[in-house]
Image (cartoon, rainbow, N blue to C red; front, side, top):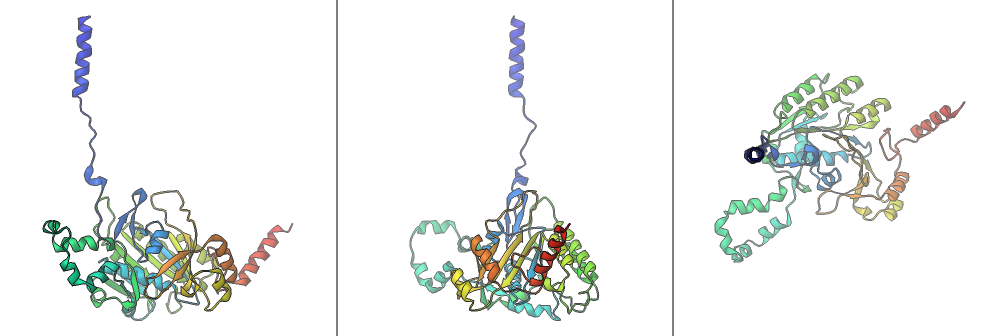
Length: 386
C-alpha cells in the first residue's frame, strides 16, 4: 500500500517538472513591412491603388503578387485616372516603378502624374504656425518626444495611401529619381525585350517568408495598341500576360495592365480577362444626359462608371462577393478622385441608358455592341431548335 502511494506521488512529481517542447516563434508571428504595405487576411499583404475609395471596394487594395487588368473605354481615357494614381502613389512612397507605354517617349507621361493633396492638418499648420507655437496644452509631454517624432505621428495615416489633387503635377524630385524605369513598346518587333525588362525589374523583389522592406509596381498602358508592331500577334501577347502573371506571383510586386477591348477578338478578349486576378473596366457617360441626371444624384460631378468584375483571391478558395459591382467615378472641384456605389436597381437602369460602345466583352455589365447582342440571340435560337 505504501509502495503504491509512493509510485503515484513520484509520477505526479514527474508530471509537474515535465516541460513542453512547444515554443512560440514570436519573431515570425508578426513580420514587419515597409511603408505603403498593409497586412490582410490569409497572410496577404496589400498595396494601395492610390484611390482610397477603390482600396475599400477591393477589401484593402491590390494584393502583392497579383495581376490587375483594366478594360479601357474607346470613347474616353478614364483608365488613365487609375493608372496615374497607381503610379503616383508608388513614387510618393518610394516604391520602384516600371512604366511601359506605346508612346515614343514614355517619360513625358510622368509629368501628368498628380500630386498628393494637402490634408486638413497640413493646411491648419501652414495657416496658423504662430498659433501652434503659442499652445501650452500638455507642454510637459513635449520633452519626451522630438519634433520629428511628432511630425511622424501626424503623417502616419499617409504611410499607406494618399489622396491626390489632379490639378497639381507631382514634384520633380519624385519623377527624376532613380526609382523609375520607362520602356517604349512602340518600336518593339516582339515582346521578348519587354519580358526581359520585367524579369530584371521583378528580380529586385523576391518573395520570402520574412519581412517585406519594399514592393515594386509595374504599369503597362494600352498593351495591344495598334501602333505596336506586335499588335496582331494575339498568341504572343497572351503568352506574355501568362509569363508576367507567373513572375509577379513569385515576387513582392503588383502589375496593372490596361488594354482596349475593341482591338481584340472576342475569344482572345475572354482569355485575357480570365488571366487577370483583379479585373476592372471603365465606361464614359455623355454630358448633359437628362435621364441619367434624374436617376443619379451628383450627376454633374460624374465622369464615368467603374465596374468590378473580379477581385483577387490570394491564399484562399473563398470567392469575394461585393455588395455592388458598379460605381460612379466623380471628379469634384478641389477634391480627390472618388467612387460612389451605384445601387443595384439603379445600375440596371444605367445599363439601359448608357449608349452602346464599340467592342465586346463577356464580363462587361454594360453592353457595348448591339450586333453582338443580336448575334448571341441568334446562337441561342439555333441551340433551341430541334
